Image 1 (cartoon, one colour):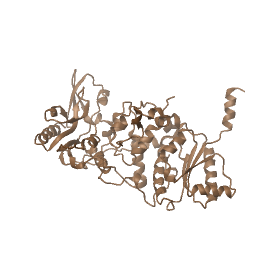
Image 2 (tube, one colour):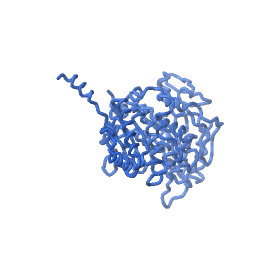
Image 3 (tube, helix red, strand yellow):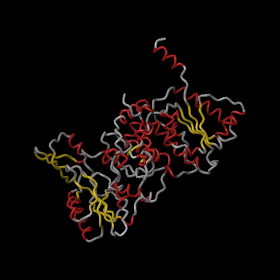
Image 4 (cartoon, rainbow over the protein chains, first blue to last red):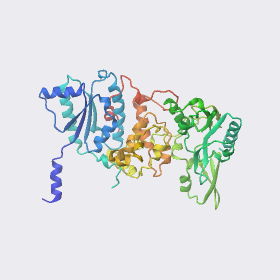
Length: 152
Length: 330
């Protein structure tokens, strides 16, 4: 098979890489509940468990994009319900600014999202993930953030 | 500028001679007259080399972290010359408990806007040997005779949008300027970028950031980048910067640095001024400032000492990150 055709073949099968940071106390348990309730969400989502949404250093998200992620979603307890009282309030400010900056350097704003999912919201977890993944399919492949400092 | 300059130089000499201060942090001429470099003067005689003219753009606040600590057995204060915009950085460092205020004597100096020698040269002026400013006109001495150019046409990037002529902190003031408030729209460049499509923005930043040679000048000149141990360094390794060997940090250097100073950046513009490659780094910082103003209310880092920065604070009804997608435009 000629290389060009082979490349197109691969493109057709493009699957997004999506990273989901889930807080241990709410969203990760929510994902668990979604699983035990046999709710379906796409396998493109790779969950990373963090002790609190506030643990997510903006560098984690940058690194995910640099390594080729097509979307990053961050899930935490609802504001006011943080296991550590105030963690997610800080997350909310940080992520608002970071997402705006990512959009500013050319990573479309649909590729980043914060959702508050409690341990009881298995259904919400699955709907959120389904929505997010279909949004990423819509946007297609991400820019190569890792090439930000390489001139063509 | 000449009048202020003469007053400043004689006042500094006076303060040092009568023992009010034992050290002076100011500017000294470098190899060329336009290379005004930060310098610590320790004797009255050395003050002969002190200058204050249209090329003293460097912000001296950061040097006070080290110089405001008086070694044991020594007494006296350290004098620092601060222009209006530099005082914001000084206040921000006070907020962060990096400067010992009691040991510092701030001599606020008036400023008419600083000139950029590259822009003077870009006006077609060659063979430059000297320059002096009077009433907004820069008289450039060249080997072909004197040429005149308006200072406002050759301003350094940071002075194009002036913060205002008022000092926010000082012990003594030598200034002839009326404060007319901020001049120019400093978010113009940010808005122009926001109006582009995301592909255009990515292409813009890729072209700009690819110029970076990782000299670390932006970090070293930045008053907000004053951590004792920087994430980009690994002093124990024996080499100055570890980031060069970590491809992630190497690629994301400017984005990470901009986030580290978000909410603390006073928009002093030193990063862009010192960049040897001419990367408009202030566009990152101004984007954060613009967003912070928009989302959390107007905030100017360093306006008063002791403010709680927007990223170490929150309110229960803050906007959700979704606002970035929902907001009007782009």
